[in-house]
Length: 315
Ligand SMILES: Nc1nc2c(ncn2[C@@H]2O[C@H](COP(=O)(O)OP(=O)(O)OP(=O)(O)O)[C@@H](O)[C@H]2O)c(=O)[nH]1
Ligand SMILES: [Mg+2]
Image (tube, rainbow, N blue to C red; front, top):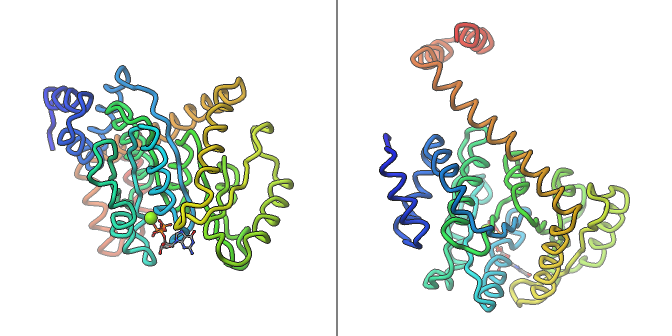
């Protein structure tokens, strides 16, 4: 998959001038090829326009795509250009997620100011966060005002994705029993706004109370921004205006001194993630044929620990 410098320059010209074909190609290459993704992403530095990145996360079926669809509608009414990266966790219970995303947001497909792309989660450690980071950068350079990342906040990789967002909305739904406990501790920390969606169901008030108690026990890291709780019925477009207000208020917070520090510390985290991904790629590439040989010998019954130790010592 050799893509030379010329290809990259041509693609970047296409992407930054708003050509949809170039954008689609670029995002596909970024997904497929980590080295290419890194090359493009670093080359785009000078073209960044400061898109706002919103993370929307929550359990499968909690209504993320429905909320995103409403948020798109809201932002389009304000003439903002919106890109969506919907991450499909490829898990057994959401095998149809990509299709679901497409159906849920389909009315925006014809709109020039909207770009929606579904990403499949790959098995590789750090693979998802890497390609999502790179893709957000590409979409920023392509001139989108908002980039929304929809993801099921299940694995560590997914929590990492959420960490790249400027503002993270965590969805919860009532009537799931022990809701609060089911939320990953990591997500409580990264939530900037909680959205209790499906508030037409019983138990929204209980959930909100439980959540407030939980939040009072776990002071938010910034110690200044207290994540607000909004209730919504996304299917009826209820609560979405309120959600947008909180998102805007959070943007204002990010401009404060504390907010700026937070963004900088996220840059630091992003650096660590990017470094990990780059080192893994470089390390694996450096193993050459020995990697395949070791894989084969494990398949033939060699102890995996022994195989790893031998590989690492030989490299
Ligand atoms: N009753 C009710 N149903 C809702 C609400 N919001 C979404 N739904 C429904 O919940 C189902 C799942 O919605 P999605 O938007 O696909 O949920 P999701 O979180 O994106 O799902 P995955 O991407 O598969 O994880 C759909 O049938 C929606 O119509 C709501 O506020 N109330
Ligand atoms: Mg969805």
